[in-house]
Length: 108
Length: 118
Image (cartoon, rainbow over all chains, first blue to last red; front, side, top):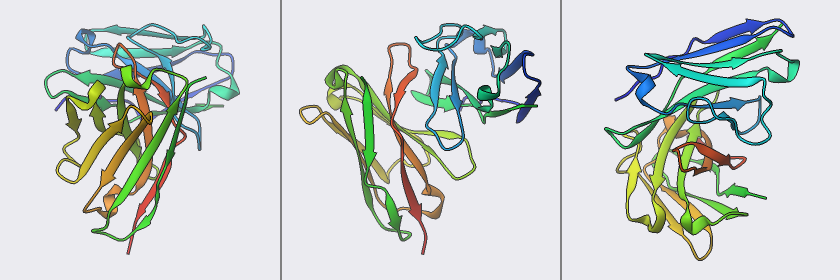
């Protein structure tokens, strides 16, 4: 089955840029979606299909996908961005959905 | 606005059964693919099951196949998950989620907690 790999944690100072990576075999051939999950809350879609932003999501959130790595970038990080972030793809071979293990973003 | 409201969670013994429900509103439920996704305590998200429009096609994660059954009632705008032969490792918050056109989960419920323990 398809596997997505995320680093467990990222720490960033307020106002700086956070980059969260999601690795997978030839992931650039798949559409990658990203979710933010604050403690005790349900996940929220922040980027869909590599680089599109749902309405209501700040422009500070952006995405890219190339080769074997997709990246979620958060610029001008704020305290409210502290959360777990998950990448997700659809595995066309199995018909199943796959999530990465999640990255905890800590704002220093 | 879009709302997904799960219910039916609770405490059950290993080997027991539970039926989860998800009431949908604010969008065309009958035209939407729907999913169940779960999150064990302190763990990440795990996709559980997917049901197509009209229930013509259904997929399950290997971890629940043969024990869980996803279904839907379009007239009642409701999604269900029948969980049988429950195991301790099925303990999790269960979310229902709408699937968007690009296979993203664009709307989520608040989740319902299932605890499997003796």
